[in-house]
Length: 274
Ligand SMILES: [Zn+2]
Image 1 (cartoon, rainbow, N blue to C red):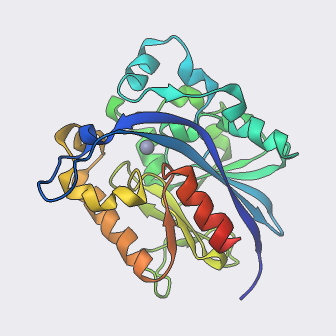
Image 2: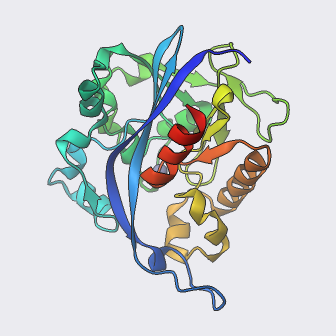
């Protein structure tokens, strides 16, 4: 196997809190779903040996904490915990990586906890799926696309990925982003239209945005309560997305999602993959 991807790193860039019992109904046979879980805004840094650094999402940006009514409504159901040092730009600097070294930013979708810090990466091209771009062009309030978090040059700099092809032993069509078989982008609906999910082939890793909020929570999907169902763009598609993730897992590929626990992702990346 080729060796194009040097490494994949993970950063937790702020988190929000949510009650498990508010998200899913309890079942009689299982122990009660209770307690508060933290959902980190996960960011992945991929080092491609030829292209350089590719960032997958950018986590929260500091502006989401501003005293603004729209942001207040967004924060009310999921209180956000975020400090300046949690920002991806700050965490990269601490590792000695300058913001200008990031060549590409793949935005999985345009929710605030994924695009928050994107303005800092001014040298990067932005990659999104075609459905995500269409959603941006025709967004409704419910789509939660806070356009002010995107850089002014977004439309000139964005690379919209339109063609997806079948890949052997993989259940969803993909685009070979750099034509070298290292990073494949899939477009998956449900939580939001056309979420860009990334297969890092050499690392046997699939980064699946918000296809669900936690791989460990996939088993509760059919017990999701009405309100969290309404937050999804389309719940039927959401269920199909879960099926896709299960099929990918059957191919012995590790699936992680953006809001998985830090422990789960680090275990997969640092004990199994890198
Ligand atoms: Zn989202």
